[in-house]
Structure formats: structure tokens, C-alpha cells
Amino acid sequence: MRKWSLDLESMKRKENRMKELTKKDVLGLISLTLLLIVCVFAIHSCAKVEAGYVGVRVNLLGGNKGVDSEVLGVGRYWIGWNQELYLFPTFQQTAAWQGQREHGAFQFQSREGLSLSADVSLSFTVNPNMVSVLFQKYRKGIEEITNVYLYNMIRDVMVQAASSRTAESMYGDGKSDFLAEINQLVREKMQPIGINIDYIAIVGNVWLPRNVKAAIDEKVKAGQLAAQRETEVATAKAEADKTVATAEGEARSKKEIADATAYAILTEAKAQEEANRILAKSLTPELIQYNMATKWNGVLPSVTSGAVPFLNLGMK
Image 1 (cartoon, rainbow, N blue to C red):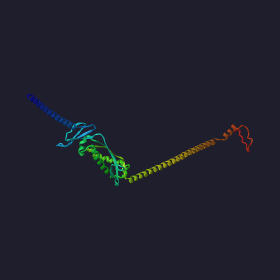
Image 2 (image 1 turned 45 degrees about the vertical axis):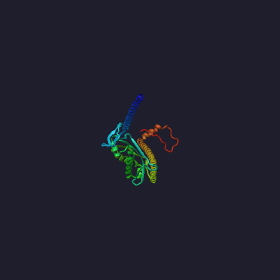
Image 3 (image 1 turned 180 degrees about the horizontal axis):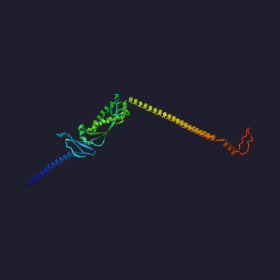
Image 4 (image 1 turned 180 degrees about the vertical axis):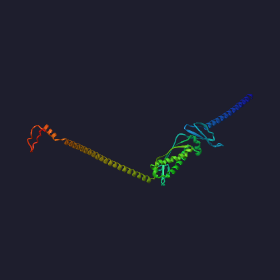
């Protein structure tokens, strides 16, 4: 009996030790679970602002509810359970909106009331020092700000700028002025809230109704043909003027040669006349007799017509 009682007591002690060990294990498991939960929460609450971005912390609850004015640079930050972190890129952002078939993504009307459209591309940067102002304005991230608010603003500005212009001007040479006004108006609206517009451009050309486009194309073609004709006429006139100028030049050249020749002949004749006059003045009977005497060979001519020239050899 005693042996059985000892065995019973031993079994009870073992059972008590097992219960104590089980409680410790349960408490340890609960502690480990709580620790894991805390670690997961801590990891989840630690947010990172990567290079090329800035962050804005937003308080969702409490007396400080709203946008934190502090702009968060690159690094890790503790974001509480009642907070959210919004990231904004500081590098250049681009967007392009394109329609389908013969209709652009943006519709507007010309001064004549014609329905026009265009595809548009956009490039901009976010001012990192004004991210909190930008978020307070729209309460959205950069993608939604781009594709909703910026899209709507560009559309409204295009409608405003197109209403004072003809379809032909926006389709042709006036497109650059049209875009310049759009860029200026959007830039003036967005710069004070932290978005710097680099450029807004029309992709391709403005879409016009088919009949209007055909009429403008015909007008342009006619203008080009007229310009070509004017060029041809100007070329022909220039060639004619060149021929006339050449002929006039040749005529002037011949006249100058003739004048020079006539002047030379006249000068020579005058010189000869003067020489003859001087020579005639210098001839005297004695000189004539002298020349005859020095040149006569003493033979009389075999044929004469009457009087025979004879030297006067008489001495005075």
C-alpha cells in the first residue's frame, strides 16, 4: 500500500510540473507573438523617401490633422498608424494624351465655331520646396494631379486661346503663337502652387473637319503655285533684263570704240594738215631749185608735153 501511495504522489508531482511548463510555454509563445506584431508594425510604420523624390506627411486624426508643412528629403521616417506619406518626384515628368482616328484628345472651337481637336504632350517639374502647397491644393498624388487636374487646365486654356483664332491660323503658321499663349497661361497658373511647366506641345497637327482641311490644302496649294509662277516671271524678267543690259553694254562698247577711232583719224588729219601748212609755208623758189639740183641726174626726160623743166643756173 505504501508503495502505491508513493507512486501516486510521484505522478501528481510530475503532472504539476507539466502544467507549470505548459503555462510558461504559452506565456512565451504569447510574448513572442506580441513581439512579432510590434516588429511588423514598426517595419510597416518606417517609410522610405528614395532618391529623386520628396515626401509629405499627412496626419489623419487628432488635433494636428492635415498636411505637415515639413517637406521630407531622402531617408527613412517613422509614419504612425494615423499618418500617410505621399511621394512627389523632383525629376522631369512627361505626359501625352492622344485620341483615336481623326479626333484628338483635346476638343475646342475656332473663332468661326468649327470643331477642332489636337493631341498634346506635356513636360514639367515639381518644385521640391512647394510640395506641401501642391498637396494642400489637390490632396492627390502626382499621377492624379497630372492626368486629372493638369489635363483639365490645359483643356480649358486651349478652349480659351482657340476662341479668338481662326481654324486656318491654328492649322498653319499661327500654330506657334497658339501654343505660346497656352504655355504662358498654364505656366502662370501652375507656378505659384509648385509646378514648373517646361513645355506644352501639339503632337502632329491640329485636327480639322475634312472639308475644312481640304479647302485649306487647296488654298495653300494655289498659293504655292502662284508663288512658283511669280518666281518664274521674276526669273524670266531677270533674264530679259540681263540680255538687254548685255546688248546695251555691247552697243556702248562699240560706240566708244568708234568714237575713239574717229577721234584718232581726226587727230591724225589735223596733224597732217598742220604739217602741210608748215611745209608749204617753208617752200621758197630757191629751196625748190636746190632740191631739184641735188636730186637731178643730168638726164633730160625722153617724153615731154611741151615745156621742159630746166634748172635756173643763172647766177645773180
